[in-house]
Image 1 (cartoon, rainbow, N blue to C red):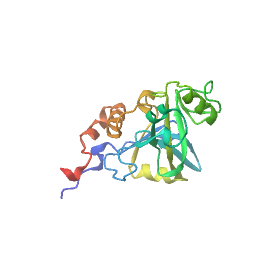
Image 2: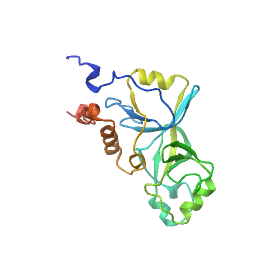
Image 3: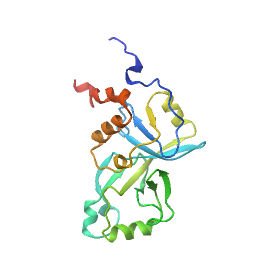
Length: 201
């Protein structure tokens, strides 16, 4: 077997230091079931560790499975944010503190968490959810130095800014990953030529 240069994926480019609001994009060869072709929004990062949520991993569950409410709760999907804290639900939204008090701004136009009762009232009143709010079960967590190690192994590339419409979209996992690749610029577009399941070729 002929060895190929790792730089076929432009992974040797120096990556910025991760920060809240950055997006982590899994390289095409990551085959972990949870993180394969994942798009992760970092919602917290400091010297002690990092926390993020996968935004393109739709589950077969809906809000009705975790919160009692009107029938249309069955139409609001749940996303899997990562393998940690699967008994916890988080919410990512564009509504801001005027609608959801105590939320944290993680990026331009994007907010995380906030007052749970305000969220329930908003949804129960039939206010629009699609494109404005994602309900996410679990999260992705890294201990001190762990994320830096993974970046140094070329598991992730970092984007400082990404379109909120992409993050809040409801595309299938692979389609959102490909759209995110496109948003990262021309030099990463070869990633989209890499088969989802190389063993099938």
